[in-house]
Amino acid sequence: MKVLFDTSVLVAASVEAHPMHGRALPWLQRAHRGEIELHVASHSLAECYGVLTTLPVRPRIAPATASRLIRDNIESSARIVSLAVADYTAVIHDLAQRGLAGGIVYDALIARAARKSGVERLLTFNPDDFERAWPEGSRVVFVP
Image 1 (cartoon, helix red, strand yellow):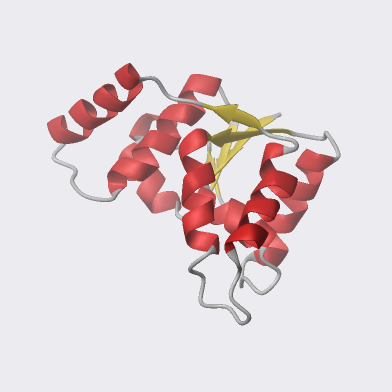
Image 2 (spheres, rainbow, N blue to C red):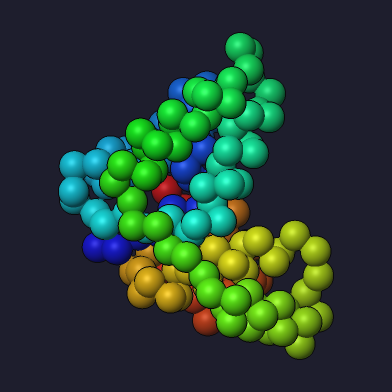
């Protein structure tokens, strides 16, 4: 099964102190064992780094540690899905036509990567955001 992990799931799986760690980690472990095919939007790599290095945990996650977590937990086993310029412009035009503004653009870009890679599931702890950003994909949006 092809599964795209949203940033919220990637961060939770990577940080033991995260309140959703216990729900996210088994999915990442399944991916590492080859039971599921892990897909990640290229945008999520940068977003993970930004979130990991600013999480309110003690001790703080250092930049080098965040980089290692991304390399070990994501890059080592994921298919990274890149978007083309045409994908970005299509997402922006679609959101504008539907009157959606603000940060939803980031979820819409991740949804575009999910659609582009033909995943069977998009794992997220923010299902409402993804269902707004990608209404036709609501059947694949799943909360771990």
